[in-house]
Amino acid sequence: MTEIFQYILLGGLALALVYAAFTDIKSRTISNRLNIAIALAAPLFWWVSGVDLWPGVALHLGVAVATFVVTAGLFAIRMMGGGDVKLLTALALWIEPTWFLQLIIIMALAGGVLTIVMGAYHFMKRQRDKLAVPYGVAIAFAGLWVLSIHYLPSVGTTSVMG
Image 1: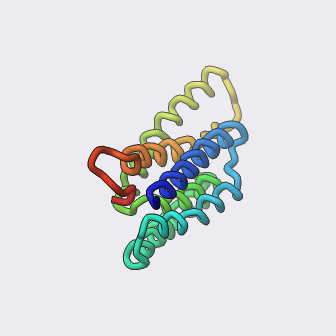
Image 2: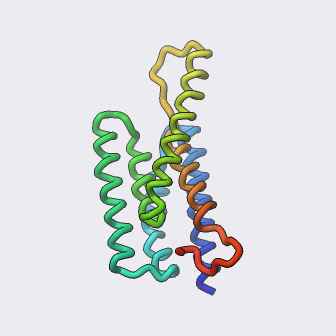
Image 3: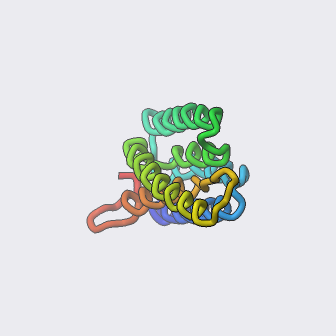
């Protein structure tokens, strides 16, 4: 029965990531309410998944704090948007810490492709304004990638957390 709740929560996270990507494309913003909802749902997922306070929850929180520190620095030098910082930090609360590096690599690759595509489009339209890349799309893509690889059921597994 707990697996059903895990998958319901993961499905909610997946929908939230898709929503974040679409709103970032549309308005170049990711709602604070959405980011807060993602962050606040993570402890429920930990509880349903049986994550121990030590070291499990502590590691999730540590990765999230480290993510926030690094991305807040990128925000300070205008290399990342505030909504992107909050979305990635909230996502760090959900993703198994050992898989978070994979998420970062996929995010960087997707962000690079997205930047090239957006840059080419920007150039072809001869737009003079600053290029605004909806990086929430890359974050959402990477999050969905990791969810699909590590959290979807596969033959012989009985838990989404390992």
